[in-house]
Length: 510
Image (cartoon, rainbow, N blue to C red; front, side, top):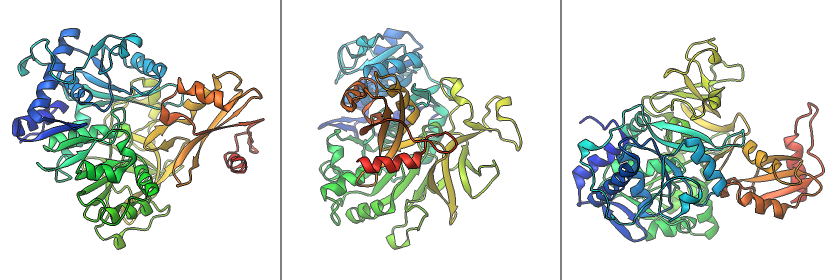
């Protein structure tokens, strides 16, 4: 059977197969079968089309971990729209900048008035099918083409503004063709939805579960802080999260031997997985396979995978103690270039293939991110084609045939899976009263996980006041955990900020 050519088709195929025989979504004790969720999505699609006409272009989704949020996501896709997830917990100013950059026609929300405050047309999502326009017949629905945009994720940008990453239907369909059957999902499979909808790992959760007829189970944000209890209370069989959540379980002392007997698959992505953390998780879930997924948003969720052997004694030894990121998914190609731009075993990772996005929403961000297909070609002199490589900015090395992630080639930081450009945080800090200059770096916390530490100069700076002002300017994951005030930033012999000296100075003042 031919795979669907647009994203909603993967869900619709499961609706046809399973109807009311299987549960598609479970949130806060409420369960919807595939048929019920499809009906709810159809109602939302009808309301969207009634508001925008037959061809909505881009629809925002400002909703949290509710039935309405997931049904609204499907409803927007069913209406032929591009989905732009928005986080209700992010500052309104940041959300407003994304709305403007994305050119939204409408915002779906489960909170009355939330979108109106942001100056955009609002459509209130109801928790159950509400009276309204009758659902359109499938033949009347706009059917997106493979090169239409399925969703846009906004990541941190070095210029101080969020950077839009559009992912096409053909990109996500290529991903699902590889991943939908990978994890043995069946009628009794219960897959976690640990990621917020503004994080592209959530797209994996939704459509890998729904493409294979599993149940997507949505924990609350509070439940995610107790992973072992969540796995057991929700009877999860499949887990996907950032590795940082393992540290939460370790702090609680809950990673006891065989404490998660229901788990069959444990997948981690968004940041490096320390092998020590993987061993602790494996002890608690001895019947669970462990797999690492790696990939920037620009390559559609993940582009490589590595499954650790069932026998922990056979696990590899790597230069930095992290699990390998493995090999490219079928259909993708990788290239490793050294500092001189020559093929090597260690260097920057480049990837191309059907999952590679077409370019940023703002084309000015494309500069330097694509590498031409031919040797010696000038990347700036030609249009980006399907044969161009995407430069991930990640350093890797090849060990025993598998790629191992070594860190970044630039100053980008990952905190609990979120990609952060320090320049964006620094730009916001410099706009605050009393701040002359700012520098942001990653400092390990007590568990060794990175956290943001900001250093500012300016005699009148009050860290507590700066923290309060940042609350209105940056989302929680981009706010520094600590702000230090110095007379000046240390410089090296080249006149650049001395990162190492700064780390030493900060360690003395902690």
